[in-house]
Length: 304
Image 1 (cartoon, rainbow, N blue to C red):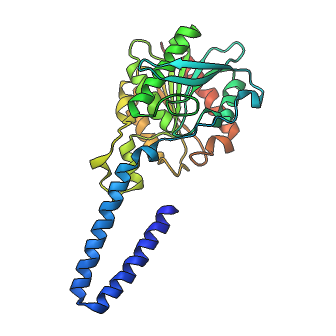
Image 2 (tube, helix red, strand yellow; image 1 turned 90 degrees about the vertical axis):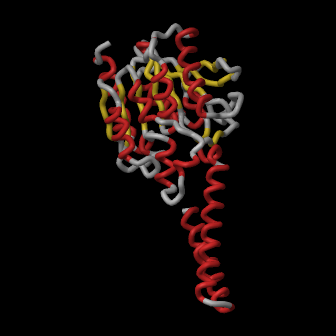
Image 3 (cartoon, one colour; image 1 turned 45 degrees about the vertical axis):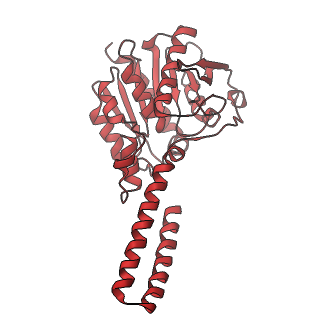
């Protein structure tokens, strides 16, 4: 909507300036002047997109206004130290007689306090869950970066092993949206201690592909400052993979989910969600639960 209004305003202003210029000179001079203005506008938008990539990708909220107790879940408030000196804030929510623990890598906006509905689903399904905030999100220290978010996921994975004595073969590494890219990058590095499974929900093939999708008229691939090449990383994953994506996703094209599935090694499966990018799992709770019941069964039956 914002982009549409912006282009309408630019078009109206350009037409008005063209008319004023045409009244004072030759048509060719007016056309040359308008062409120069168009080039300047194009370059200006490209520079702005380059300069503000970090803010377009990472949208952290510092204030954590809710916690699992607000939905009557018992939890442990945890702090996770990273190898590069940051401290991550997170919650560990246990479930009775759980066979698996979900390590939850959240999306690019908000903080862990905005994921309570998903935590409730995992608890209802009898899954332990550790959710953590990336550096710069909520009560976690630091500032988010591409490498930093992956380090954070690996630190949370290590915390489960060291502090909860959780076997890697009972950890389900789960990422939604940006978190799917983070979880995949982390799983690709866990060659010696792979998780029980990797679940990627509503995620993208790469940050560059998303930029090119939203801004096809700009040379995004020339000046992208982030990669998050999920399609490449997933080829190195050594565990069962489940891709969850909705054909109705208006932010991350459904075809990107299919491409991730095609790139993933066996064993793998694809689960089709319904609804939009941010509301699909909320508006279709029965389907979402069924997807998770099936993927847990798939992970349990996969060869070790």
